[in-house]
Amino acid sequence: MDQLKVAVIGCGGHAQSHFRMIADEPRLHLAAIAEMDEDRLQKAKSKYRPDHAFDDYQEMIEAVDLDVVYVVTLPGHLMPIVITCLEEGLNVSVEKSPGMNSEDTEMMAEAARDANGKAIVSFNRRYFPEVLAVRRLVSEHGGAVHVGATYNKPLTTLGTLAAADLNPDPIISDAIHHVDLLRWLAGAKEDRAAIPVAVHSEVQDGERPGAHRQNATIRFDSGAIGVLMSHYGVGSRIQRAEVHADDLSAYLEMTQKPQVELYTATAAEDGTTTGKQVKSGLDLKAVGGPKFNETAHFVDCIINDREPWSTLDDAVHTMRLCEAIRRGHKGDIT
Ligand SMILES: NC(=O)c1ccc[n+]([C@@H]2O[C@H](COP(=O)([O-])OP(=O)(O)OC[C@H]3O[C@@H](n4cnc5c(N)ncnc54)[C@H](O)[C@@H]3O)[C@@H](O)[C@H]2O)c1
Image (cartoon, rainbow, N blue to C red; front, side, top):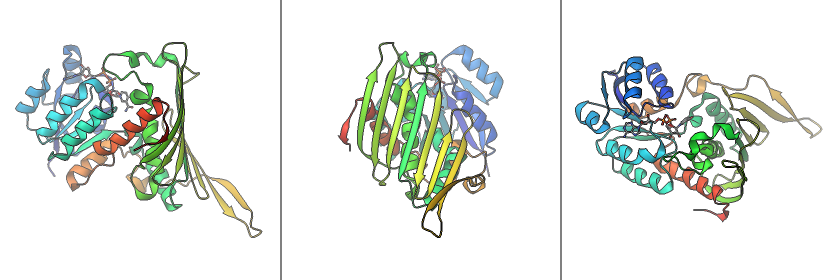
């Protein structure tokens, strides 16, 4: 099979992760990069050796024959680039957050509906093999009944949130990862992300700039209920999640490389039920292996003409849920 020709637009900090995933994917070839900052352009050019390098992405898409584009700019710069690339018929990976607000996401989703290419939103937690293997188990146990997520950071890691091109809302800019993960785990039974139908959120902004606390309970259309606890200005960067089904509980530690604790409950002859930890319950092979990631999924979708799991249409629900949590919404949501 011919390799798909890829370009990366925006070669800053997070693009390095996409460059690594592209290099590890044999079905992709790095044809071009575009970056407005000369120093970053030169660094990426010498490190990743694309066929072509440009300071203007529009020149790049006119000059180079491309199949796929990764747009890895800050959310405030994404929309015109994503829409232009979709109009050119390219397959587009859209970095999270997909725009500054849900209206931006909706506009990109509309462009994607009319486009020949596919669009994936880089909600990378969805594609962690451990997360996929847990979802598979949850599905085998009849689907999620409860999901929970913790997403905390100290003030010191919050510097960029105040930047002009990021939404200053800490949920949309950052904790969106675990808002989206809650949807993904809650939807395990039907192999889709669940749609939130009601939210009760309590929000508090601390006196210190950048200190925010938000606790929310969420009801999903899958029947699962969930909790998000996200606090900024606390003791440490901690990212955890949990999902429960009938007689199954999975605890995911995701601050570093994901680790999973699994528990199952079985009924004894006397009718009592006992839970015990299961040491080897995760089947990573069944979900693409330990190296599976969003890039492999996107290439699979392009080659096999399938919709990615995290489309722009789907991302609108995550963005609206983030907005509802942050405004302290209490009640149904659409
Ligand atoms: N998924 C994750 O775990 C994760 C982690 C970190 C960052 N991110 C996301 O990645 C995005 C980028 O973050 P970052 O830290 O790499 O930002 P960054 O500022 O380091 O990089 C963005 C780059 O885009 C370039 N750029 C902007 N407009 C451009 C244009 N029109 N043409 C070419 N280049 C352009 C900028 O010059 C900059 O170098 C953010 O939206 C952030 O939310 C995701």
